Image 1 (cartoon, helix red, strand yellow):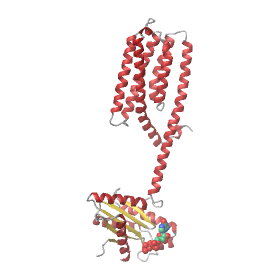
Image 2: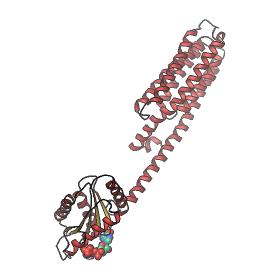
Image 3: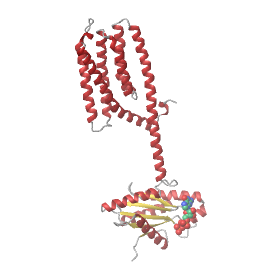
Image 4: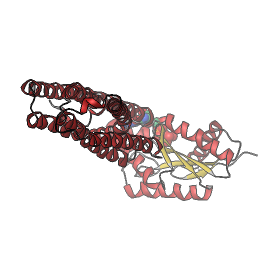
Length: 381
Ligand SMILES: Nc1nc2c(ncn2[C@@H]2O[C@H](COP(=O)(O)OP(=O)(O)OP(=O)(O)O)[C@@H](O)[C@H]2O)c(=O)[nH]1
């Protein structure tokens, strides 16, 4: 299957972003090549001016102007690419694209001067070198590569016939062969480029999936105990540095064993999923974390939350569950599924283990007091 048919929007987006970035990196390298080549032509023209003196057409000044322009343009664009504050900015790749197009026009002019002045020996090796270095640096973006190579190619081919030499036919065959080699090389390089990005994308997806598996509870989809512990540690650290508040609510479904025994394990699973949704809708924002602590136990991590605000959330949990009205005929306290909650507020210096133990103790007190209620942690005297 071709790369294009297999492509998905995410992959296409990533490919175009990497291409944009790559063009500013390898485009810089190619601009240095342009500087080197134009300096060489200028030097050659200076030290051996007779090479252009033959024939009726010898617009030497055109050659010098185009080489100086290539030098100046390449240097200016290298400077801009290096100094740009945001190296990923899309305008950088547009600038590189247009620069390649302008450079191509200037090189086309240079080759026209060579052919028109009868200095044809340099044309084939030099154009081949230029076009294949363009291939190495721009193979991943067909449009940019073509905007550089096509004008050069067309001018060489046309001039070859307008100013015929003894080698006109042979040169034409060589240029056509070079075009075929160029295109096949471009396809091979591009397919490796796409493959490398595809593999990288697959690795990123795999890592994201593993992260999800490591941090999510597979049944309910909410955070698991491990991820809760990490977030709690982070919040406690933040608490030590600021005057923020932090509250935990530990929650336990009442008489869940009886629910399982009456309705079956599958229904028990669905009940836990519904409870998780209830807790999520009672949470206020993305800062609040709802996690499954284990079995039919849940926990809510509420950053920047006072004990009074936590009580309001606990009430909301109770209301949400009541509104859901999940039948629990085996419960001795209500015909519907209920939940007991223990609230603990974190004071500076309290460890994560201690805070959880306090919320657990408050939960135990809520159960002791008859279940289907919340209880704030009361330190023993
Ligand atoms: N369906 C289902 N049941 C689970 C899951 N995890 C734990 N349980 C069940 O939850 C029940 C917990 O029972 P207990 O610890 O006695 O708690 P309880 O019956 O709610 O009693 P109280 O907490 O005192 O109200 C056990 O029957 C477990 O098998 C689960 O993922 N799915």
